[in-house]
Amino acid sequence: MKIVVFGANGQLGRKLRDYSANCAKHQFIFTDIEELDITNPSAVNDFIQQQQPEVMINCAAYTAVDKAETEPELADKINHKAVEILARTATKYNSFFVHVSTDYVFDGRACQPYTENDTTGPISIYGSTKLAGEQAFTDSGCKGAIVRTAWLYSEYGNNFVKTMLRFGKEKELLTVVFDQIGTPTYAGDLAEAIMTIVDNKEQIPGQEIFHFSNEGAISWYDFATTIMELSALKCKVLPILSSQYKVLANRPNYSVFDKSKYKNYFAKEIPYWKKSLEVCLHILLNQ
Image (cartoon, rainbow, N blue to C red; front, side):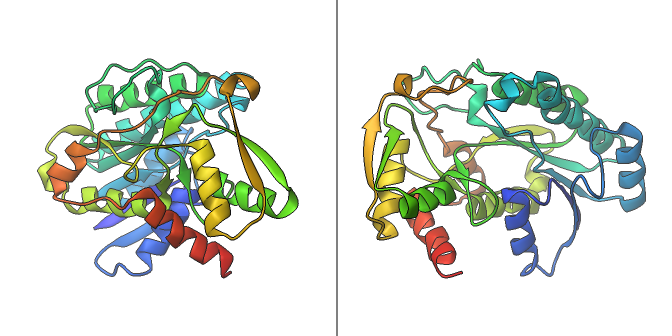
């Protein structure tokens, strides 16, 4: 199949590039803002008309959660309007469309893992724009899947794991919130999950939503402590409340996913968060 990946220079896009290096059965075309402005309808139409891909994967997003509070129009342009353009174009050219969304579409007030059918209720501009993108996907009538994920990290770009490694070398003491619970997601595992969906797209005649993260549930404090331990860093991590860590945007206090649908749909097991963290740290610490 011919597969176009948008947002190819981000964490997930880079892991899909890595995946493509060992995947001879598909032809991948990677694009980012330098090659294609996905907020430009005519440019997207011309590109897809020329390439005629069977599959479109959107990894592009405005992910600066706090900055989105002061740049709502830009966040909406990328997280909502661009998705609307891509989804309508996918419908026009009969491409299967995979769009990546987020746990931030929920309010985080649950006390059990979120299913795909649970009521959404974003509490930030970022979450609201991502939910608007989901709704644009649905309204377009395109064939495809929305994949919600959470706490993404990898060897690439800026993320919590790389920040902790840097702080762990620079600082003796660090404070991290312990009252926000979720699950880290290694971008390499998410890339494989997306390709599992792509390879089985015949099972999805219409539209589906899937939740995907690694297995388990921890706090950011647990995550930071484990990163320090596995990396043999001496930096001490202390737990604090979210109220003690001032940020512009509200975060969900609980964003654990129920991944039963993905696992049952594709008969797949999902790696435990710590095992995947070890894989990523091995790469980072041996670069």
